[in-house]
Length: 220
Image 1 (cartoon, helix red, strand yellow):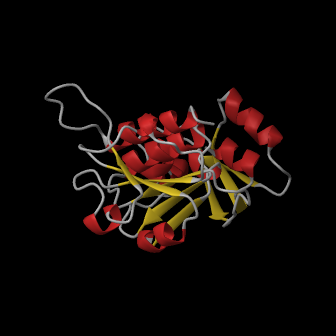
Image 2 (cartoon, rainbow, N blue to C red):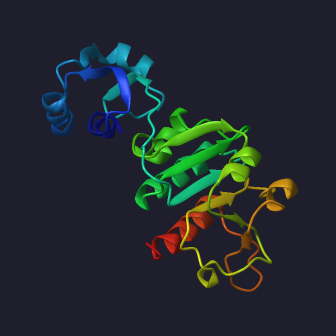
């Protein structure tokens, strides 16, 4: 994640703390490639353990100030997430968004923090590759979006592959338990579902989003 931070330049005031002695060749390589402005501090083990958020760390942690950067390109495919509660799920979705070159991700009020430790671990650096807009009014985003708006539903929706989505597309995905709210669903152009095996009720929201993003990527 720290390497992604350095490569994509989405942060300022980056400070790296490394457990002393350094035993990882990967960390040594990262230190050598870090810009001169990066502040790097060696920390004794008993102090370093107080800095980490996991029981077993990789011997490196960092603190930085996040820059709000727009990717500046036309939006071909964007994701909007409503009320995703689990930071692990959100991290996985952001990792999927990075993998399939999603142009922007909009997170509604009440969605988990995209930069919490668990979400950062789940995203594996995706937060430094994807343009993320937090605490947005999804209703306003939908109203202003110049393209096709698609909402994901647990069942009863259209087949995504059957739709003509050659225009800019905004894909809406709802919370783990409740899905999208009725007021948001009433605004979409199409409601889609993933066909599942008989008697299988639903997919994990991160898995479902990955399938939808993959299907969208085949249209590129």
